[in-house]
Image (tube, rainbow, N blue to C red; front, side):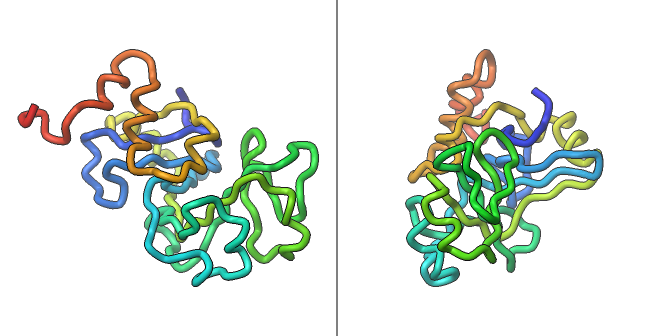
Length: 184
């Protein structure tokens, strides 16, 4: 599968970068200039109510900020799924299917009711032109289709394993591979 908005990058066992070890990244934008995504399985201990109090009632459980990646960790990105795909609220920008980014400066009263799920990420993952393709070619990432349930699940501890397990062929086998094959 080619990397595109809506695809998942699942870290392979060879990926040694601690920012991405065992991670699942949702790609939000892929183009000639590079790619941008957020790590789905790195919840923080910081409550959304403490960081962005106005948004506390709209976020999916757990109501914490997620560490989206190592870039711009002092900023936040909000990923949401629409309640009604035919009715996009102000401040929503579709990225794939009925999922998109929400401008956190949007007036809350214009967004409420328009979103089925919302998750807020501190920082994001970014790749320069050809950088992601090179990492995929090196075997650092598996590119697989996303399921909307992956994006907003409450417990993300087994997300990587679950995503790999549902893949056809050898990727399902990789889901059970230990980090150190000599320990098998």
